Length: 259
Image 1 (tube, rainbow, N blue to C red):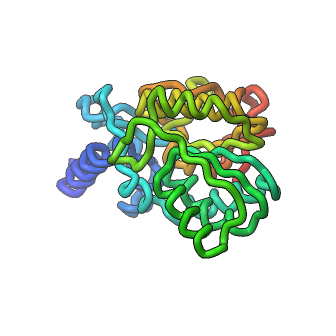
Image 2: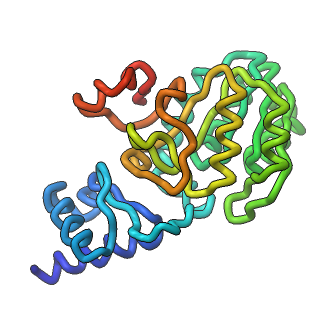
């Protein structure tokens, strides 16, 4: 194999170590090579036990993949996340009670909440609550802010744990906007953090409509902990187009919203 190919494989390993996952389409664009070449690199690296291939990309081999920090997640694929969050805002109506999960994509929704009257926003995200408080102090946000206390996960600027779960169980919402770390049609929605996955389950259970926001880098990824099946989610907003075979999967087409 050429030195250039070996350099690309080394770069793929660095990206896997940093982010826990890579996508074929992104690598092909970054390296300016065909997707077939990227898939061949991934196959070779999988044979060397450097990564595990998944649909559309690859993930870290180790079972103890760490979720990237909120800062790392926030700067990745920012244009796609803004587009997804803008679409999510169209699901909101005045006077809604909404739950907003901690996540880099759901965080992009917060600026748009200024356009709605009488909202009640329930969240475990420090940045989301802080933004809303700032808007309220400037008379830019008309509504209530409810922050869920609990164990502080400082790397991700969120709360979780049994206290947050008990608080979340006290509320019923019109819509819950959910962040995830992975989505496979069979495995469902998954997370790298057990406590976060349990709190997210509470959000889904206690809302009339659950809406997942995910960019294409999460599609085909299976993280450590299961949140729920795709059947239990009402809508999935993404920038990823399903192929013809996937569209036949148990009514997925009706809830799959591409923006």
